[in-house]
Image 1 (cartoon, rainbow, N blue to C red):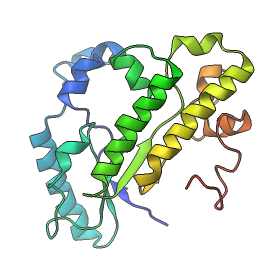
Image 2 (tube, helix red, strand yellow; image 1 turned 180 degrees about the horizontal axis):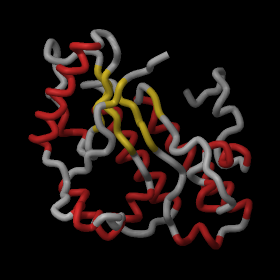
Image 3 (tube, rainbow, N blue to C red; image 1 turned 180 degrees about the vertical axis):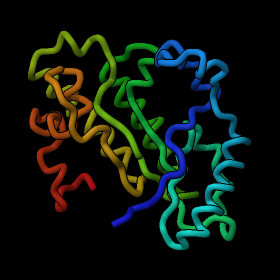
Image 4 (tube, one colour; image 1 turned 45 degrees about the horizontal axis):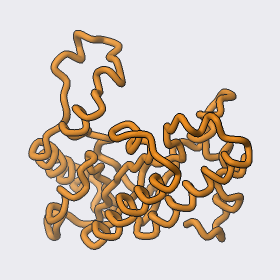
Length: 215
């Protein structure tokens, strides 16, 4: 069954573009073609979304339409209002590793607080205005400290990270782990591979069960 149609994936905000230095972080394959690339301003994105909604609705009256928040979820409060918009879902991607990338390395307690205070509180507030899909998340904190952990310490560390995320997702309509499966044998990739993370015990064993407590 068709769950929904997403208009655009990760139209990054100008602020985040600068904060993580996108051209350096993701070097262009074709530098000449990429010259002049920049973050997507909110006014432009709102205009684009309005036009996209009208065109999709003309062809599919009832299908849910999903809009990515462009890493600025609070700027959409008051925008997706009936009767101009109906049956929409806002997609937000919440990676705890961005706390390391944009700020600093942190302790496990700091990461758990960040997930609770930033992710959980924001979802609780924003879910009053629109249904929310956490369309991407994973366990990776990008903390250098994790490379020195023993097997048991690593298990305890990432189970705490996982539990904090599941608690934060209580106010989301749905969530998607990124990714379901990766190829290769790399401990870092294990954190991005849901199947491997479940196998290693980093994620709950009942995660894929319809009767599990994490849906």
